[in-house]
Image 1 (cartoon, protein in one colour):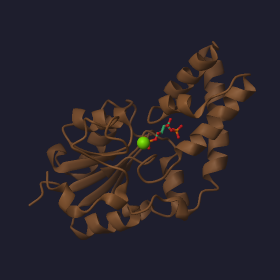
Image 2: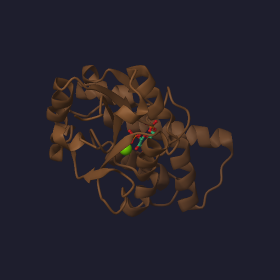
Image 3: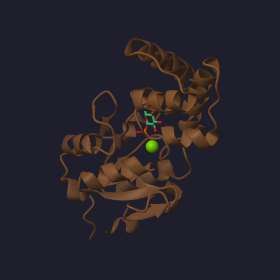
Length: 215
Ligand code: B16
Ligand code: MG
């Protein structure tokens, strides 16, 4: 029988592709400052916090600002980003996600979101899937960025499940490291070259079945 009693899901890149909206908003900010952000450069911004993303963007554009100016830039980006995500539709949920949530819940497992995003609740509401999760830990509740395990550890505590009985689903290298740092199992969602530290790697939740959680 599987040890797994709880599934903790990262949001962006596992449940839905909000990365494309982050990209549009960061690119718009870069363009306004007089430089461009390529799709390749955008890879560096995935899975990390808003302010850490801004620092990388300013490094790409070789721009220097003080803390007050950086807060204003991050806030401007977030306003644009929120405009984009408020247009999202439930059909943007990745294939297999709803089916898999129903399957794990049907097997008596608890479910949680562990996301760095301060906009996680807005996204879940927009997609109509808030009620699928017993706990939602987002960037407002966890302060330490992945690979620190705080976001997943807090989710496990809220669920009342020991870390060694939890599995985290993650698309970012820093997120896989966070899960392992927290003593949890991890399913990498994406490429095995990038997510090699995970216990197994799949291309999406549509590839998952319950038997694959038999670690
Ligand atoms: P926000 P996740 C992360 O979400 C994104 O992957 C990352 O690109 C973003 O900078 C971060 O959330 C913060 O998002 O600006 O909305 O607070 O992958 O942890 O679900
Ligand atoms: Mg992610």
